[in-house]
Amino acid sequence: MTKFFPRPYEGELIYSTIARYHYRSASRSFKKTTKDLFGCYTFARVDFPSRISTLCDRISVDVSFDPENIIHRNTLFTYYAAFMDKDRRNHILERMKYAVGKPISLPIPASLNQTNSLLIRNLKFCPSCIKDDVVQRGEPFWHVIHQADSVTICPIHELPLIERCPICGKNYPLSSSCYHLININCSCGTDLRELRIYSSLDILGDRKHEVLLCRDTQFLLDHYQGILKINNWSEVYKTRLKEMGLLTSTGYVKQRELLESFRMYYGESLLQRLNSFPLRAGQINWISNIFNKRDKPVHPLRHLLLIRFLFGSVENCLSFKENNFQPFGKGPFPCLNPTSAHFRENIITSYHETNDRKTKKVVGIFTCGNCGFSYSRNEPDCNKEGAYQIRRILRLGEDTESLIDKLRAKEPGISIKDLSKSLCSDRSLSYQFTNRVRKVVLNETSRNVPSLIVINRKRGSFVRALDCINNVTISKLKKVAGAEYAWPTKYDVEWLNQVKPCAIKPKPLRRSMNWESRDNALVKLVRNKIDENLKSNIKPVRITRSWLTRATGESILSDPKRLIHLPKTSEIIQKNIEDIHDYRRRKLVWAFNEVKSKYPIVKRYHLISKLGARNLSESLHQLISEAVNKQSVLPLI
Image (cartoon, rainbow, N blue to C red; front, side, top):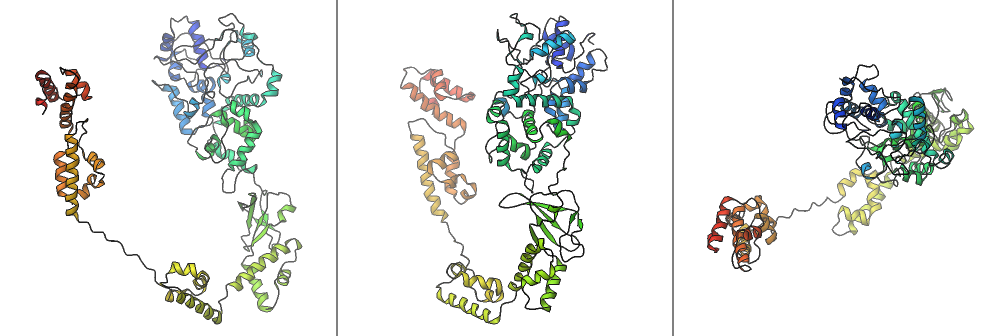
């Protein structure tokens, strides 16, 4: 057990605490320090150090040295875990406590590792924070907030973070073989507390969004307990998008409008600098991945960009309650059936949302459960007068339709206008009510059975069309006499089925194969190809079934089911197919002749290099030795 270990400061990386311990204990090497603290040689990383539980067991007993407390407060775990699912978050937490061996990989796509700036490469510091740390605690240290990828400016002093000394260029790379300690002075003698690159006023003017992102990151790290309770960020985003009119009624994000608004809010230069510029709508981009591919992790910086665009800050996002937006206000809603006794009474408890096909705006559909009256309302309007503004009446209900039937039976010649006036006395609804009554009346008359005169006339025109077409078929009939064919399909189906031509089914083609003649032809072809290969003076090719298929151009040779019908061809193929030993033996004959034509004496290495093969069998080695000793090709034949 280690008798001495410095207490981590508030907001300090555990990596920084280990670095302070190393230099205070005057350890001989970084490996010895790692071995003393972790019991192995796995160095503590800046973002996801492992074996934190072992570290807490090996140092002196202290209430503050709790593994989970250190992981949440003194590492970047909370920064990445805030936007992970629960299973992945718990998996990484357990690995940070107990894992041994390979370092824990970042829970973000590999593509971000290849696109430079999103992943931290060097440790960063703020000169003013170094000055405050020396005044308050007597020494500087590495801050957790400064090492997050979304933090390029100090959230406290609003000054840009520095990665290297501007005088000598010294930096503090994320190395797995040492622990960097930040000092007041650089190795070149420069006082790091006095470094200045930009003033705070320049930062606020040019890089205002980056300052706000840094504050959001600080809030995220300070309030991790409330943030980790959110398991489905996409649903939180969609609730806000619904309020902004960027979500359809079916739950799909309006990608084009969202991307345009997002780019206008931040500007292309900032998004390019943060490596988070989304592509065009319709292409795969990180914003679409947040909503469509929930299992695919997205970098926390990009989540913070989207949160600030939607909510203004992470604090506003946490206080935002899901499903609190109702475009048409809270129910109940009035029933606007002018023929009912509960006209304008608030008895409709719920509504259904859809989108207008042309304007793509939200439309609410309200249906009364008592009378069946249904109507739609336009874009959200939550005031009292807007609740009675109908966009369209969708259904009158059974009670109203029965009243229409009674009035029409009582007064057969009554007009649609007089009919609607007698039922609806409300002027604000008269136009929509009249239109709906007209549709109900016209649909009833159009559904009447056609008269016998009309039926006979239509049948006669259909028969005449049949007589005018030679070799009549249904497809020809539809092309030549489409109108004559369409009417009986709707009003006279039984008669049409009796007189229309039967569908002609094409007869399947039967192709008979003369397998015997096919076998004789293939035998000659295969034998010729094999003889050409064996007698050729060029580099030999191994005789296989696939080679014969390519050489002859006959795919049937590689199909064992069809080769059953070709016994002669199958037999000659089986006899001449070479295994690797036979092929190399034949190739050695060719290699000997090739070497003999160039060199007066054939040596062993000549044959082996010309053969171009490894792992030769013992029998081939013996044949090579005999051929070299006798300087003859006869042992190989």
